[in-house]
Structures are given as structure tokens and as C-alpha cells.
Length: 82
Length: 260
Image (cartoon, rainbow over all chains, first blue to last red; front, side, top):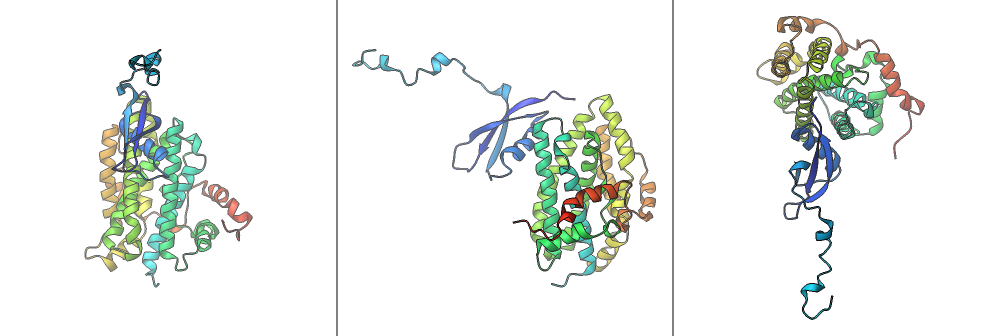
């Protein structure tokens, strides 16, 4: 039998709103991942579009030091001592 | 609301099939699929089938009373139930048998839906669209799983064993004179059970070819089986009584109970 893959599920609730990542499913292929995603993440709430992307196709940065600098940028402000 | 008894019987048999398919799927849902995601999907699909049963019952019960629906499904003895042998087929939590049963059922169910659409019955006009949409996804789901199982030799062997066992039940699904009588009364061209069976067998043949599995009976042999009396005559498979008793236990405890 096929290896199961992890698919990230992205729910697009309304056409004019941004899609939201809602979770993930395990499935042997894209079609079954979409079926499972529909039954798990869209069976009780309506949505406009449901997308699955195999997790390995996500491009990520996982540098916690770099990503935690957002609120501490006093060094970029000339009048503030840091 | 005066419904032609032929149409009422057709819709009631359909509701019975959906009732049994849905309830057997939901019997112990966590024991079927290979993982949690699939079991959740199976649970949801079983609710679709039960919902179809309910919509069909509402179309033939004038009062629209839930209690009347319960009585029709839970109070009639097995010999008065005309559920098909395919719908009542019990797979004992076997994943391959489960998939092949659902796959075959959705193929014949689709032929029945097409037949009903030709009749253009106003009483089910608003529900056939929902049923068609959901059933086509269900069929795609089971087909996809069957293809995955057939990828290895052992899986193919299990599928072949199951096909050998379940294939004859396709004749039982269309047996009896109901389709012929309805089509003679409502359609320009008479559609006989053998026509509906042949169309279903052609679709199943195409799927079995993809699965690399042999067809156990010729079309002629299957058509010859149409005269055998089975589920549509209230003659059910071995073990049906046990399942019937299990499914009606809660209802029999308190038949007057009404869900709030």
C-alpha cells in the first residue's frame, strides 16, 4: 500500500476573505486528502474553497532567533538607546 | 398527497437500502479505516446515507412525522423489508469487503438515481440533486481506495475473493418487476431490470479492469439470476435476523420515545 503523507488543509471561507490554514490530514494521495479534509474541516461549516498541500511542498523558515525580532527593533530607531 | 403505490414502493425500497448501508457503516466506525482521518470520513459518509434515507421517507410520508418514519424502518418484521442483499451485506469490519461493497453499491445506486431522474418525480425533485452530488463523491472515494489496495498482490487477491462473493448480489438489487412496471407506466421506453443491470455491470467491469481483477460471472449468468427471489421479496441473507435485532434493540426498548 502507498505511504501515507501529511497534507496541510487551507480553508477559504468566503471568496472575499483570505484563506486560513486550519490543520492537517494524513492520506495516501491528494484526492483522498481532499475527501478527508472536506469531511473533517468542512462538514459542519460551509466554505468557498478547500485546498490541500503536501507538507513537504511548504517552504518554511524555522529560525526562532530571526523570527522573534519583530517587536524588538529599537536598534533601528536613531533616538532610542538599545 | 396521493402517491402512486408503485412510486411509493420504489422510494421505500431506496430508503431501506440507504438505511442499511448507512447504519452498517456506522456500526463500529473506528474499526474500518486505516487511520483516524478515514474513520471520520466514513462516519460522515454514513450520516449522508442516513440523511438520504430520511429525505426519501419524508417524500412518501404525508404527515412528515419522524415517528412514522421510525415505525416504517424499525417496526416492520424482516419479511416485510425489501432491502437489497447488497445493501444488507455485512462485512464484519473487513476493510477490503467494506470498500468493495460500498463501491458496488454506489454504482448501482447511481443507476437507480438516473432512473428516478428520468421519471422526473416532483416529490423528490428537491433531494435528487443533493443525493447525486454526495453519491458521486462517495463513489470516487471508494474507487480511489480500491485502486490503492489493488496496487499489491495480496490486496488484489483479497479484492478478487471479495468480488467473487459480492458480485452476484448485483442481480438481486434489480430483481423483481418494479422497475419494469414503473417504466411502462411513466416512460416512453420500457426499462427492464436487465437494462439497468447491464448498465451497472458495464461500469463495474471498467472499474474491475483498472483493479486488474477478474469478473466472476458473465452478463448472461447475471441476467439469469434476476429471477431469483431475495431481498426485494423479503428473503434476506443468513445473519440478517441478528443484525436486524441489533439495529432495532434501542427502538424496541421504548418505541414511543421521541428525540427532543
